[in-house]
Image (cartoon, rainbow, N blue to C red; front, side, top):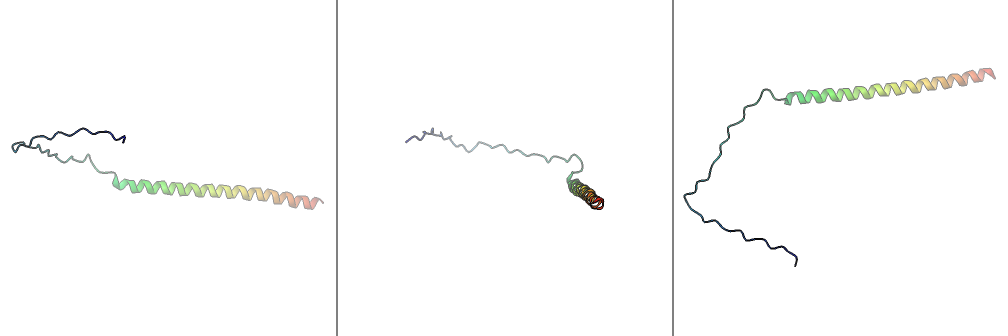
Length: 83
């Protein structure tokens, strides 16, 4: 009911002497070495950096929690001796 009417496409007369242009492109020379071998190395360095940073953060958190536990235990032991 509400469909738009599309215009009729005119047909072109066909002639046998029309030559279609053919474009041949020469291959583009590369501008040096590709970066493909370096992508793996960069990704590896990034992964190693992330893992080492996570391990350093885990060690720091563990050291802080051990220090807090030592302070609490020392205060408990000192409190027991004073009584």
